Image 1 (tube, rainbow over the protein chains, first blue to last red):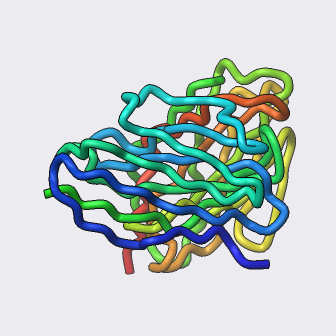
Image 2: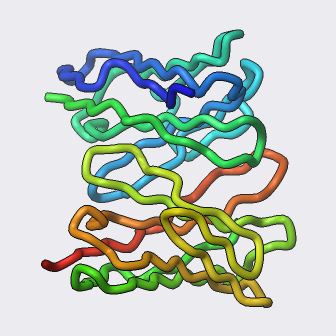
Length: 112
Length: 111
């Protein structure tokens, strides 16, 4: 069974731009969560989607948004990028609420 | 969800058994303990998960005492490739919750 895939793997943007990251969960998994990882703040929860509905949200500004499609694939969007948004963005999928999460390789975003 | 506390770092020589302990004093009845391994610039990899007593798989063992307020990840005969950050995580079965990762334990295996 293929694992979680994330695209693109690397991305360079400039301040003020917006970016969209994509995540394809493990086949059969319906829950997708997003995390931001930085050296200073560690792994921080962004949001979780299940059946196309956001079920939980972390403490991030409204510039961070996401959505989930009917095939469980998910995208996250960051608008008006700031230098501090430079991070590794991780997507994790699980078979359902509260189940074990399996992570993708991440998207490395660099904001200049 | 229960907050977890782990040592920030550990060193071990190749071939030794490594035990990493995680404290989760406020663990609830329907909480499970999950451990992940993460290499630099990669996503965390699921290692092992348990509820109580002992769980063993091909990679590691997980020991959970009766009060479940702590857990110990045991890695047998570590090699240089086991150098990574190890995260202990408490997750609740059912329902949606904000998953909180702690600082993790940076394991350095020395030749």
